Image 1 (cartoon, helix red, strand yellow):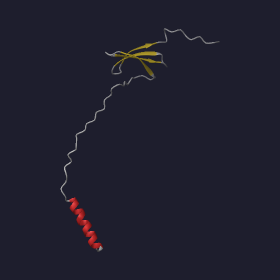
Image 2 (tube, helix red, strand yellow):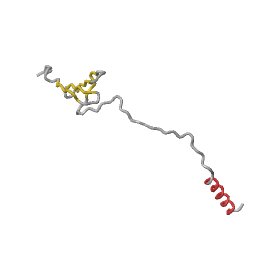
Image 3 (cartoon, one colour):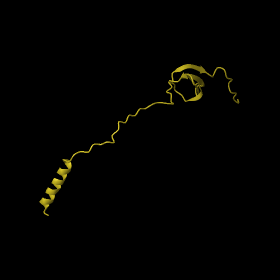
Image 4 (tube, helix red, strand yellow):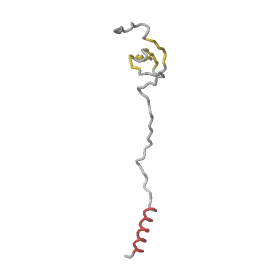
Length: 96
């Protein structure tokens, strides 16, 4: 087989593959993905609040140790009330 015949047979082979009937893909499925936030809140404070209590109906209570504040929020994370814990505690005595 000469080089020209070999190239011609390759060309013919690829031409037949390209012109063959396309097969239908029967396994195609319409996939839909949604991102859903289930158990997180975005609080509008600068600090490190710790979850103190939650109420099944509407409120979540946080305590922020650095600022010593109690935060009451709704389930969406909107701050409803802020209370400072500094006023009703005794100062820690220091050794002088």
